[in-house]
Image (cartoon, rainbow, N blue to C red; front, side, top):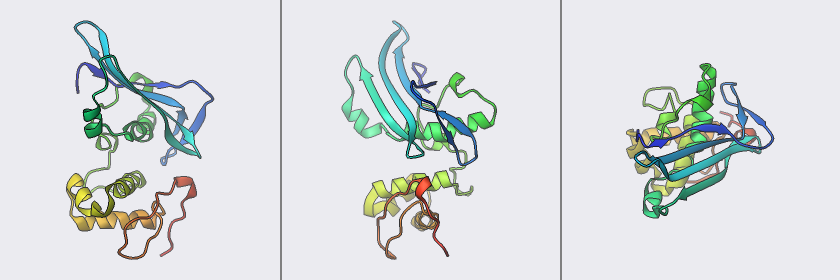
Length: 199
C-alpha cells in the first residue's frame, strides 16, 4: 500500500436504499468510496477519486465518479491502470463481508489495488465458483471480445478450457444470455432479471 494514499467509505447524501447481498447481508446505500493521495511532507492533497454506489433497478451500480487533481490528471496512467468497476466490487464484496464479521466498514481502510482479487475471498483456482466470481468473469468475457479464452486464461492463470467452462456455467445460471453453440457474445443479465437455464 502507498502510505500517502487512503481509501475510505462514507454514507452518501440522499434517501437510504437497503440492498441485500447474496449472503443475505443488508448494505445501506448510497455510499461513497474514495481514494485520496496526499503529500505528507506539506499535507497537500495531490489527487482524489470519489465513487458513489447506489441502487439502480434493484442492483448496486456506480452512479457517480469524480476524479480530481490539482496538478492535472495523468490520462495515460488512467487509460492503462484505472478500473472503473473497482469501487463497485469493493462495496458489493468487501462491505458485506465486513458487516457479516461485525466490523464497521466506515471505520476501516479499504484495499487500494488488486481488484477484483482483493475483494474476493474465493477467487483462487480450486475454490468454489461463486455467483460473484462468475459475474466478474462474464463481464471480463464481454469486454475481452473474441480472443477471450487467451486473455482470461492468462489473467487468471488457468487453461483456456477452464475459461470456457466458466462461461458455460455463467450461461447456465442466467448471468449471460444464450448463444448458438461455439458462438461468442450474449448479454450480461442483472440478478433481478435472471432465469437459470433448465438442463
